[in-house]
Length: 290
Image 1: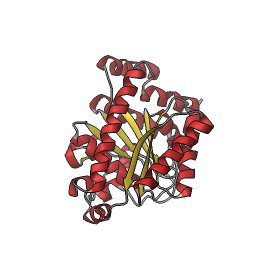
Image 2 (image 1 turned 90 degrees about the vertical axis):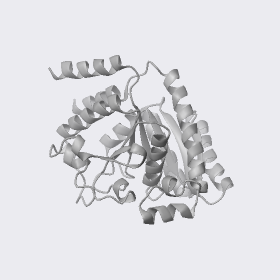
Image 3 (image 1 turned 90 degrees about the horizontal axis):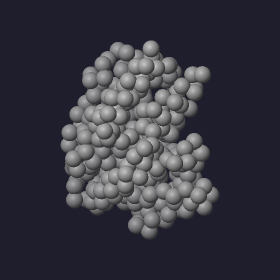
Image 4 (image 1 turned 45 degrees about the horizontal axis):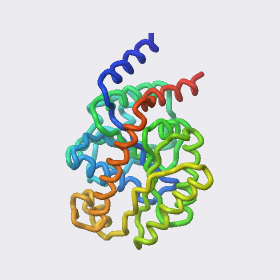
């Protein structure tokens, strides 16, 4: 009965036509500005007409709502536990984007259950029908099941800085995902570059390593400069792309966002017959349960 219901839902998704594209924003280590990128990138996508929902997957240590200066009474864990409906944990952010907070103050490691993942997949199915983009802001640390989620998405945006440890960890993350899915679309970003040369060198090193050692091409989105507008915006608890739209970093992010849209549209046309995010995710979870 359950398999029939899942097949029916997938049939409905296919009949609808093009469904929402799923993106995971990841980093090999913490402290590289990943959540700030996720928020501003999402806001920029929304300003360009994309209907987007952001899911803060750093459950118990989420940053998205804090960066927006919001105190949200409900979060993703409330939905996963069955305490709240999906609608009641969704909030509106800048430019009409929607987001779900990961919450804060969770003690200990979240113990994922099959029921939680069932509810998570139900939410994803709804989002793929309602939104152009589903963006997952992933935590720096990840369980095996969360890594499965990253592997299942359509696109992975990898954030690094110019620090050698950040570059090494970013490459390790891409290598892990590549071995799980050699067809995965990777986009690389250097954040907090002190010079344009430093930023170019960082993304070039990542691209070269993937090409040389894994025979994998990645898309370079570019580098975002170290900009005082970021620190000011964090203190004001507003996206820098909205508070300081003419800052160097906002202008650079605008170019980067358009580059992503153009590149991802080309990927959609090139892979029209590929399995959907939901079907890939279900297959992974099914294997884990067998």
